[in-house]
Image (cartoon, rainbow, N blue to C red):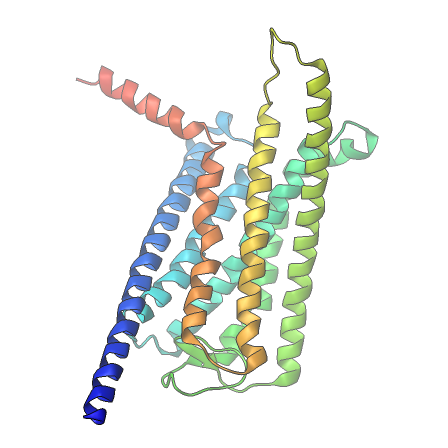
Length: 325
């Protein structure tokens, strides 16, 4: 009787775990699909503006085009494997497929970090107080954007080439290995010195961009608070002051930076924690995958708050339809 009760209890536990995994897979699918569509919409807008409406192009469109592209690829190559594993499936990607998925995800994640940092620095220079020390940078920052982003793509692709060299398909998910592992991949041979060099390079890069992002954000907050104090003193009851487009864009960038730092810090902690305990926890990794996809999902909808060209395009389409019989 005790054996039967234990068997029934274990069966209910397995069913409960499967139900949780299925619900998590559905939630992750909604998150990935929503974020991918939002980023794709904005990327299409920037490409349409660049090729068809160059007179409406904004200086920051180049940064945001790379950001939305990186977000969409990150969601696609990070979210889809997690969704598949949540539904209990384990497709044979092979060594080449695992290398491609993980390499693309790591490179695009790095581009997301860099473009968010670059966007915050660009906005800080845009609202900077007029003066000689800002004059050269303000006049030349637009020409420096594309070369800097291209350099970041190249550097990130070189840094994460270690993924191509060392990662293979993990055909036995119960095999606990040292070093980096995932649902479908693992490190072939763990080299302590190579791992330290690789992680140190990534850490230096991430700390540098996060520091630049934080410094530019603190500067923008200082400028906005100073402007708010001045506007409160000169505000008229008849003509109340309205925030300028630059200040509205600054608020959007600050929200993006706050979201990025929060989700990046949480993701980093949940990535390092299992390695410190030397214990594999697939549920924790699934939650970490969800958290790491939050910023790419939220980002396009935050940007849409300051993007009036989408509504203008809808109005133009409606007007064109009214004149077409």
